[in-house]
Length: 115
Length: 113
Image (cartoon, rainbow over all chains, first blue to last red; front, side):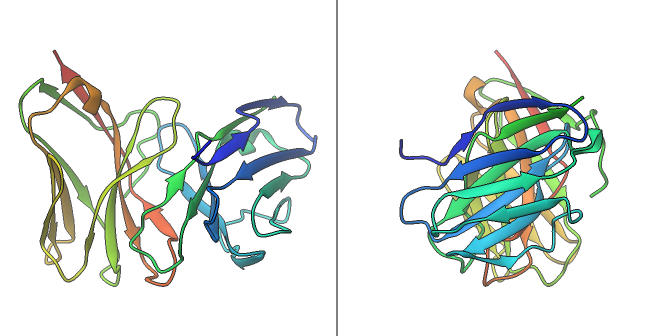
């Protein structure tokens, strides 16, 4: 498809488990962003990649969260030892360039529920 | 802005009326201000942006107004339609070199037929 693709769309896991969320950005978009959205709130920035490197990971809440983008396209957000407070929708977005007007193209998100 | 948890501010309008959604931002140094629309179960969708050196910008049926004196941003939607029903977020781009956005608290727009 032409848009940002995220899998899985829904993930239910148990506290303490490991989770991976995948993002396939729009072809040719060099910048990729991960945001987290809790119920009733706006998205919160987690990390952004320019190419393969994490240019800014200041939004990652703690060291249980990690993201990679090894070939500069698909990205995986990894959460270790999940906690109930990690439950949220994880949104991925991409843009053609980093120099920012603020126009991001978002996927539909991966809804994570930690029981 | 402050989180309002599950209780989003709501604006209810009649179909065909004009809608005005307001937002207060916090950082005077923001370079761009942006409005996003989010429908239920979907990701946010870019609507329009405005650079900090402007006070008004128009798009198709939408107008964004920026008042830097009082740090206020508004989105006006003309002739509101049922398809406009969604949560609307304002966002600031603090760093003009990236698209690292800070989103505000959303407003739920409910269009009554």
